[in-house]
Length: 592
Image (tube, rainbow, N blue to C red; front, top):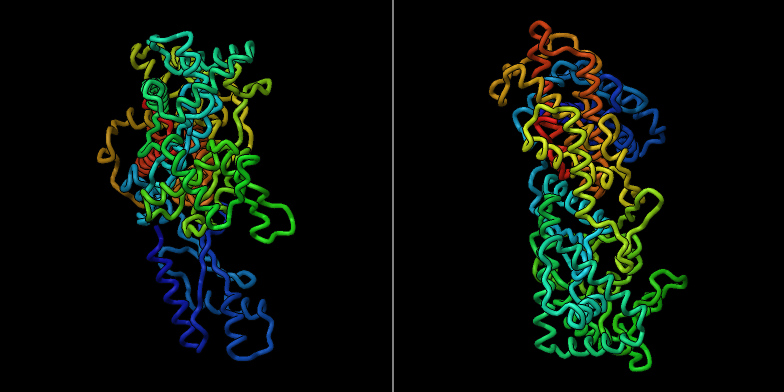
């Protein structure tokens, strides 16, 4: 917003240096911590050190930096767009005019609209692989964080300027699938799920596990069926394809409700055999040791790297019976990703923190094998989701909290609140709002904590209209919308014309404008650090600041020019709250 002014200041400082025969400065500007005034700052220490080195002087860098800052401050005077310049212990601080800064921020938000905060396109492609549910199992709350975190990272990275490929990697084959198929063929042949597909698939899997635990001798039948799969028996393959699609249809319904989409699907069945071929290559290169049939194929990573202390340990890349492991398939999956998208600058894996060592091993093995893109693979770890009482999800017992049940309960609980707060809405409107509030209540707790910290999901906190929760943020958007509706503002063109803020801004207005101005920087920060937490936090801070403004600063009942200035601030606030919610994958409702 103030690039032109900053460039002009840089040119003036360069002129100062040339006039005095000083080295050309390499200035780095940063924002001064906000204390009621906006400003930028740069250090003169590097310039002082350059000058002392070039002249071969014996001088104190701090003292010289302080002198330079004072001299440059005097040379600059008060540049256009700034209200004061000061030199402080070797730093040059420039403070913007409050009125000019406020107008620039609000005008920029209203001009850019849904694109406010969007970074310039970087022409760099990244892939984010996330969700990764297992077919033939339930889609439960334990799967939720990867899906929500991955989707939000995609939204943030795309908004920050990257070209993003959204990838899903469902586990569609393995012992769990064979157990499911065995149970279906033996006890449920011909049955089909009519509704609640993921529940039905999960029940079938839990039943298979229970039967095998009660009758261990039946494991022989499962092993025989696995052998038929390995031989690609047409009957088994046909049934696997049909039943896999049932799972994928159920997953699609969950994704639709959560507003999550994918550009590409990979399956572990696609990379099982290519993975075995890569293991053969590792053996041929002397990277992997083949201990079959008495042992597996292994990669002694620490030994290959010459490490004295244990770090990567030993990676098993193939079982002794030649069956594939996750590592087998992940080697081939990484290769396929970079074959399909050779221009990827980064391939992110959003997978839970318990797989951290696994990915370190896989990526390092690929690096040892000579794949130059191996260093562009990155694990984005996250912690589990628990329910009150420290209940952890696990599908094998069949006692999981299904995602579809969680969504239904969220919507039902939200509907009760909507009916209390706004009973005059139509039934369709109430349901639409309840869905937006309910889904938001599920998503926000997953995003408002550090990725690698456990999330304990609690209904009271998730649906809090007065605390750090999605409904509170959504309600701030609704309040802003209500003010604009009462003022007859249906679109940006209906707002008062851009205007300088010549009246004295209240502290609540200044705090709100400051947060609006920070949003683009928080987008870039969230993208750089891969932390949606930053967007979750600024969304809440914006909602809280807007609520303070709403309570302290009348809008419609005040005289001009205050009324027009505050109307524009309300519209800008509504827009940035909506933009933040969009990045979190949460709907910004018009009414609640």
